[in-house]
Image (cartoon, rainbow, N blue to C red):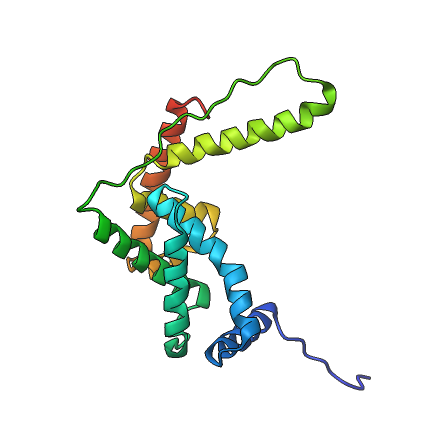
Length: 202
């Protein structure tokens, strides 16, 4: 005999309610919500901008995106997730900055080779440090190869393979059909893989 029934909320419902509470707090201008917004999204915005421009100098873009979020959050209707909305703002800001400066100069992608000589005779206690350095150098090489792709292809790889966003979310951010996302991503991955092979990375 059942004396009571307990119906638990599924994770999607809990997640939705948590995001709604967060968004409502942002709209009310609560300080904790803005601190959380900056803590959670500033690194993602910066990472997206770095992928778009192929440079680490993206502080101005991060600040501009945050400003637009602050100004526009009260008009946010929730037709998409908060993260999708923020990515769309970030893309718009990146496009604006690109259009602003492209007449002055072409986009510059770093092609400097910062490889340093690493001594082979390294004490055992420093082997872990050597592995960490080698891993970082490999990461830098992969990023430099990624920078050789056009920004629209870099963005696709960034959103799907790094940020692990769904095809539907990416389609919403880029305002293109989901099928187009898949076909363009397929081509971008193929080109990226060929470039990696040319560099001897894969």
